[in-house]
Amino acid sequence: MNYSGKVVVITGASSGIGRESASKFAKLHAFVVLVSRDKNKLEEVAGELTKYQTQILVCVCDVSQKDQVIQMSKQILEKFGTIDILVNNAGFGIYGNFNDLKIEEIESQMSTNYLGMIYCTKVFLPKMLEKKSGHIVNIASVAASLGIPGMASYCASKFAMLGFSESLYHELKGSGVGITVVSPIMVRTNFFNNSFSKMPRYTTALSANTVAKAVVRAASSPRLEIVVPQFVRIAIWFKQTLPYLINPMIGAIFRRSKAD
Image (cartoon, rainbow, N blue to C red; front, side, top):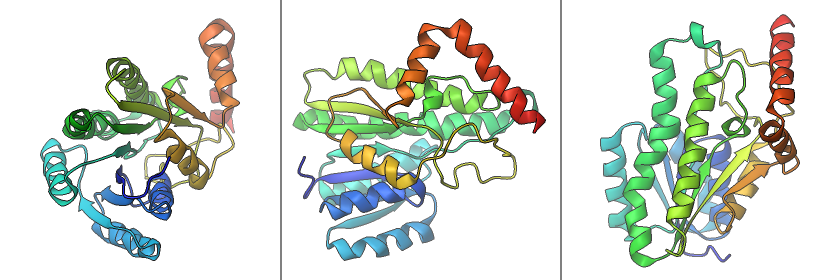
């Protein structure tokens, strides 16, 4: 797809997958809107993207706050008058047994990872439907399909995102607007860099650049979900088809990681 002149809004754009995705869209001459809570980091990213000679807009916004999302959408629509691609990427995880997490930590993950996506979709979808074109890309995880021990609240937020996206995918059929979920395995970012997280190595981590390539593909894909890397879909299929075999294996891996 030709992204030149397309308005691309990316949440969580100050680092990791969001930052890499912004760079790739800017290189393709899209107009890129960078959304995050950290103004300094957003301006740093915007400075890096000036070399692509395209329009860049910085919007400071905490997507877990509905009022801030509404104000952010007004700012963007006043500037560009439209939106072509929404990348719901903002999210974080806190690793730990459910019983050890504070309820506020659990709520914060759901508020950002799931409700933040809902708020952003809600404010921009009407404009897409009005012009009968556009695409929503939701960044989920393989954890949207596999219940991973130590990540119950994070998995819940991503299960919710995938279920919502599948429902909306059917609702949008024939409207000219598409939605695609990108579900990577573990990614090498600062995603789990917080004082609560001592994340065991479940999988080989991907680079944010690898996932960003999938995000760009997803923005014009007719598919509901793109799993990165693609072969991991086999594990998801086995878990869904043979849960009595796979679930004990997941539990065993978790117990072994705790013992190390």
